[in-house]
Every structure is written in C-alpha cells, then in structure tokens.
Image (tube, rainbow, N blue to C red):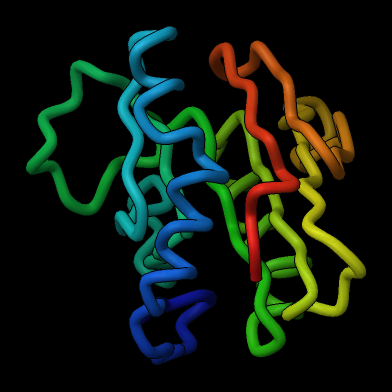
Length: 163
C-alpha cells in the first residue's frame, strides 16, 4: 500500500523472485558492510512529514545508526531508494515517484527496468539529486554490470538478475 499525492494505491506483495531482484539491486549486505549504511527491501518511507506521501520503494538504503525498528524511515536518513519497474508500475516508477523522492531530499534514486517493464534486458538507471533544480539528474545507465562508489562501494552482476 502506498499513498502518493493523497491517492491510495494497493499493490499485492511482491513474489519471492521480485524480492530477490530488489535485494540484488540494492546490493544486499555488500553496501552495508563497505560503507556504514543499512539496506532493506519494502521499507516504508515518509516524505519529510508530507502527509500525502507514504511510499514503499523496492529497496531503501539508510544510515546504519538508525534503529532497525524505525518505521516509516524518515526521508532525511535515506541515502538511496531503488524502484523495480513492472508493467503495472511504469508510470509511477518513471514519473511521480522520482519527483516525490527528490522533493523529500533523497540523494540517490535508481530505477531497475527489465522485460516485465518493456526493456529488452535488465538495466539500472541511476540518478543523483540536483539540489539547485530540485530534481534528479541521470548519472548512469548499466546493462551488464553496475559498479559504483556512491552511495557506497558496489559491484552487481546484472546479467544474473532475471525478471
């Protein structure tokens, strides 16, 4: 269940393969171990107290010192959100959700596309927050392998992900 701009959206819980894709996209404990952050899938996040937004990204990477029982995760404690696009979530994952995450001040946003969303293969689009314009700027597009140091050191073999 998510609320975006006051509109309630009820989606079924993801099946195990989708959860596995989310964990792989977020790097699992590899990100946490290397950079002092924690990761989790399907954690709700608030939008700096915005009562009309209550989102559940596929993966949330947040500060390691935040108690794991904190729900929803405050947007100011989040370093990265990952949305895994499906056929039914294309419009929100490509449009309204990045806007909401940027307005909340989340510095990094990744969008994972695959055959279920119309992409020919798994592709991760990475974005960084441009605070001067208040939106995300594309920072990369990865097809076979995602290697980055922001928000933490990460190396993901995308060819192993299946949709």
